[in-house]
Amino acid sequence: MTFNMNDIIFKKREGGKLSKDEIDWLITGYVAGDIPDYQVSALLMAIFFRGLDREETFNLTNAMRYSGDTIDLSPIKGIKVDKHSTGGVGDKTTLIVAPLASACGVPIAKMSGRGLGFTGGTVDKMESIPGFRTALAPEEFLNQVNEVGMAVIGQTAHITPADKKLYALRDVTSTVDNFGLIASSIMSKKLAAGSDAIVLDVKCGDGAFMENLDDAVTLANLMVDIGTDAGRKTVAAITDMSQPLGRAVGNSLEVIEAIETLKGKGPEDITELAEKLSGIMVFLGGKASSPEEGYAMTKRALADGSGLKQLRRFIEAQGGNPDVTEDYRLFPQASVKDQLKAEKDGFVAEIAARTIGLASQHTGAGRATKESEIDLAAGVYLHKKVGDKVAAGETLAVFYGNDRAKVDAAMAEARKAFVITDEPCQRPVLIKEVIGLED
Ligand code: URA
Image (tube, rainbow, N blue to C red; front, side, top):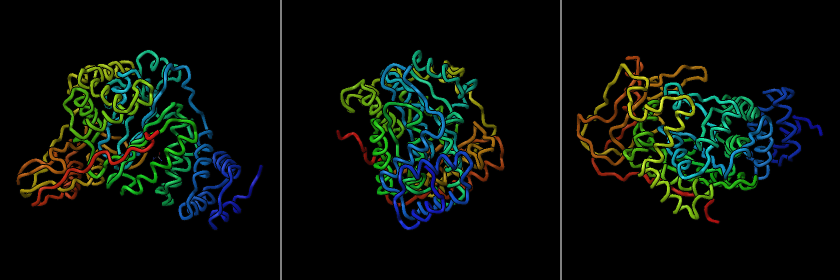
């Protein structure tokens, strides 16, 4: 079937509904290079203003999902469960939930991304472990999950090429933040990656795509609907990203915090989130009869050290040095360390996640462009979190890096993130809502 791109743009501009055939045709043509960027840009802007309904979003997701390779995880025994975060600051959850769920018997065969801008990515974090390989041949990937129980690799180049092209175009045409476009982008990759069930961590707040709860709920519902329509058990938790998650922001710092968390010594927020999300994964993976039982199991896996043991096995299987869990000096080291101190007494009312993410990027921990080299030792460690009492002169955060000027720039940026008030203040609610567990 063939269509005219101008007619499709006009239809959407006027608020019409695109058919499955039209969507399939335009995605195929765009990936093949037959439809130029300028026409797709116009369509994206029309979608931005007119939106996509549930059926259009599902059809766009599927068109992108099948635009390249899809992963067949059937050689792996058991119910495979994936977890995805919509992106945030200090979000090292995968490095904790994957070993915990795996220690409870759920096979984890996961693809992760790199960080961009002020948000971090699991692949960069894992590369701070000496020797760790994030690229495995398909057979090696599947064998490792069968033998060790988990594998996490970088996304291969051949998965969802349509999303790669469209995302790059959205990035430069102010059309990223649209519900249907975000939901189809994320879910096309999750569905192509082949797991049987998906747990989505939809971040909400200043350091996330969705800054308010209503928008986060809308996005979460849309993604749960897409997953369900595609026959995958899909659950979404809406979680706080108004301040960074945990205390560490930056690659090796975050891996160390994940290890500490698996030793039972992690910050309260990341521990709670990791136990809850992995508990849901254990339930969806059929290893617990309820989310509560799954939660009790992952709490136990954390307390008895089996999650940590699983992390060590996973690191070793992917070529990394498992002794990093006992000796943090094996990680890349920062030659510059400096402290940001409080200027007055009071209570920490706000630590703007986006600003801390940008500050961490300035230390060298994040990329300004896809091609930028990152400093794996660089980043920020928060000594105070929202709700804490602070005295003038006390350390709010420590900055790490290997370039004095970059650390100075980061500290200047980060000062803007802290709001200190005279009145005591509440800690934000961490898990705001869970969608998709009802039946
Ligand atoms: N993450 C994605 O993968 N796609 C989006 O559109 C937004 C966040």
